Image 1 (cartoon, each protein chain N blue to C red):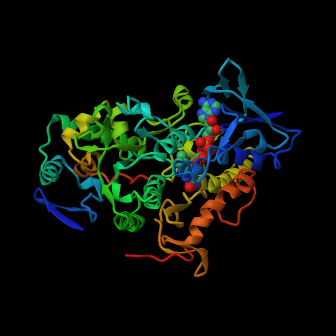
Image 2 (tube, rainbow over the protein chains, first blue to last red):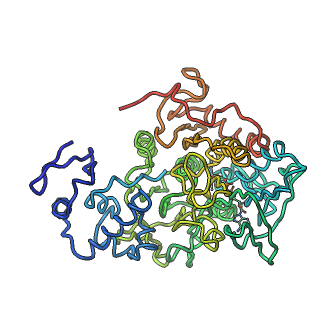
Image 3 (tube, rainbow over the protein chains, first blue to last red):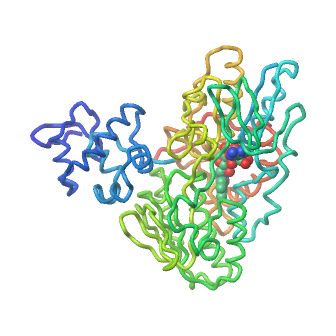
Length: 103
Length: 411
Ligand SMILES: Cc1cc2nc3c(=O)[nH]c(=O)nc-3n(C[C@H](O)[C@H](O)[C@H](O)COP(=O)(O)OP(=O)(O)OC[C@H]3O[C@@H](n4cnc5c(N)ncnc54)[C@H](O)[C@@H]3O)c2cc1C
């Protein structure tokens, strides 16, 4: 699906996750966050940058526990930054695929 | 002599031992299996203990009964694996050198990971049923409980046998009905997932079931702590659910020996190639069962399908031939739904559980994603299959790879 955001057109799946991360940039992130009622601060970016680094290394979006243990982001903080589904929301804003559903 | 060491003699390790002993030449191979526990637990049976359907003695047998002649069994705790030195250190200092290692140390519940879980309520009105002790203590509690709010809560995913908490809810509904106190019990199912289950089509079916059985479903609840003094669970984002009786499925983790060996991820699960079962970091280590980090269910049925592929790949690896990339994440689980009925689901990495018939298309006799009596009997019969065939490495008439035959795609 196509989506107009931050003055450009991006490709997303039915749930709004980018399907081509090369289209992603910080303006898009800010606009996607705004749609979720979130204003991105440095603390949010710290989370998004850890996800980016980890995603490059392992090919999957890290879960809450990994963000905590490896990324050093306390779970409580994560929920404050991205209320309700923090990993899902961070992945969507960061232009990553929907986190692999657990099995 | 070449040395093969199998760590863990649970479902997967025992099965592998029984498959490998007959095919490895005893003049060439020395095979050792290690476990800390002399008793083998039939974990799927833990589900039935709180309701008095099984007793503890129905789910425990000596491990030795399942070990074939021709292998050495060592009982003791694994301290650490030293993969760079090809050796395992046991508690007490004994050292086992290996040429090949199969890791099958499983997963365990870690209630200590959640603040307050092990507090004053633990095994008073807070129970687990993922251990024999927990399930037995809960049976004692339920015997004279007169009703109130029962909350079933999955702390975080992944957990082994992800359908077990739902089955517990269905059985509880049946059991309280049978006792004539269902009207005095409120049942609430609280999960970190956004639906009743991980896979969409099955989640819809199972969600409907909860509703029909008057079980309240609360989703997107990530448990941060348990406030045992006030009988409530609290999520990371400060939502609260009160309980009189909490049946918790705590965080599941791989064994701490994996962490001590520096071989695991943040939950002590071992990075494993998802189609070959070879460790991602060590070319002479295979991983099977709940110990892996694979995106497949942590279930005995998965370990069983993995075992066929691991056997093939182990033989290839020792002969220096390329491995088969065949494991597809196949899982096949019975779901007890109460009132003498059950469901069956069959799925893999790519295909979610779908309705249909199993194992014969159109005929069954088992129906997929649909309640039937035969599914319930099959689940109870499975205990016999487990003790007598599965653990002993016998061939079951099921292909390791999932088949789409007999399944219906639904929108
Ligand atoms: C309540 C419940 C219901 C279930 N229902 C089903 C079901 O209906 N269907 C299904 O398919 N699956 C079910 N399962 C899951 C199934 O039991 C497991 O997936 C299966 O047992 C995994 O086998 P495994 O060999 O990987 O681990 P396990 O069988 O747990 O074996 C691991 C072994 O390693 C040993 N070990 C670990 N660490 C050490 C150490 N440091 N030193 C020495 N020994 C060690 C342990 O003592 C244990 O014997 C259920 C599980 C539970 C808890």
